[in-house]
Length: 281
Length: 321
Image (cartoon, rainbow over all chains, first blue to last red; front, side, top):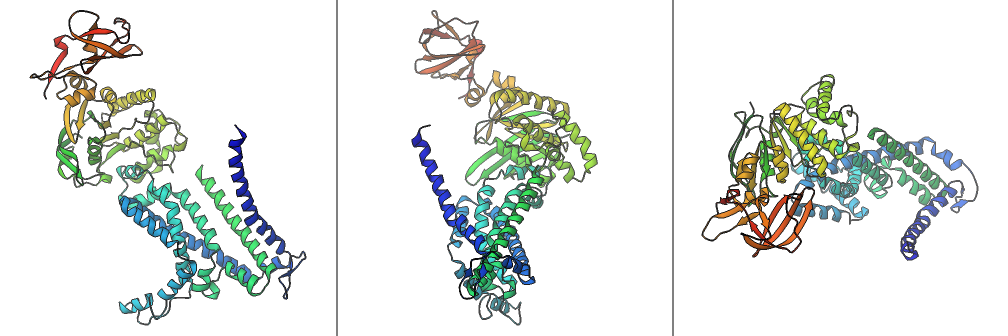
């Protein structure tokens, strides 16, 4: 191999490592270091080495918030995948032209900023307009109230955010799947309505689990939807962290909470990875 | 008895007519091959029998019962797909047992049957193996065992061996023939390979453009093709158009070459030795004549040699235009 041919790829991977280091590893290290500093009400922090910030996490409030964050993200992720997978299957069965239409639609949904989406849902779920009014009009709700803020409204926001991403991740493998596997199941006596559960769900199990985990990590970090559509008691750790770090100017506590969430996320991902690997062999 | 009666079957996809008025009867226990190029309708016919597509017109009777109102999952057919379509999430044993377990057979009762089926296809003891860990030939065998597990009334195969290398394909063809004979199951096998059809079928159905060109035993088809298409498809590629007369067909092995004497004068443009056989192409006028003979029995001829091409009249026959 000539030096000229190895230099290019090495330069590119070196650049990638450099970008990773500058934008990810260095801030992470900085965050870990800060999490051991003393909070200073007058400034951001005092250089020190204390466990105090971590001790605060185990007070009931933060403990409860982190559980809430976990189950909101898990529930949201499962919900998104449960809705997107059947839709992607349906899209993959329509004509080429319509498939393209749906893919462009899903892509275009990703263009909107989180804030705009949040506002749109706020209006849709408000008392004076949107869904409650519509339900009153069709006679299903005699006394319409605003549907947000609520846990349900926050979930709708999270599902909306994740829906396009999950659909677009799943689409290529779903569209390329070997459809004769489904036909084989039918010729072996599977009623068409059962093919989804007997064949499609099991064959896509691994990709569904991995996309659910991706969504879980993504939803754990969502900030705007909980603040706009959720009640304070629905707020996730992301909201609390920015509240502490920026609102109370307590950067060390925010950093410690972030480190704990990072560890929890990694543990959840490791457990799922080990569980899937164990069942595959 | 599970004889298959297909009468005036037609099927279109939009503007494209896939099958035009197809009629054929398959006797119980008979092995037929649907032979034709791509787009000839052979796979469509197979899928209509399986119930994976619905026909527009005609009737489809299996053992005297009309299949039309019966959905695919209730037809009791065994089908091997071109891609094999093994369930990737199930091991070998569970793939084979799938249909039985679905029909409510208990795991204990399905077990011995799975063992028996895997013995039949030569995969004894591989029940627990993941299908991803199998070789190409082994995967074929699992697909065959799975399709035959429910003792189907009709066994359908859609070009199952097209992805195998030549040696393995020969071996699988022999095994399929043996299994089919042992079970005497009515079988419809789709292929585009005339050699495969010749090796397997009791009867070959040559299809072209959605119609049946000719159906008959392999020998019969080879000896007396009734159309130019069949003759060419079956490998008889010397077809001479004689003005005012019917078209004359001569098989490559019936052509004799001589350096002098009577016949059509031509020049050898290409020759290659394929094992025991020597295949030659001779340019006669503007037409290429194909000739083949046992390499050790013919005369040695150089490339470009001028030769006289002839055949005896009893080896040639007339094709309708």
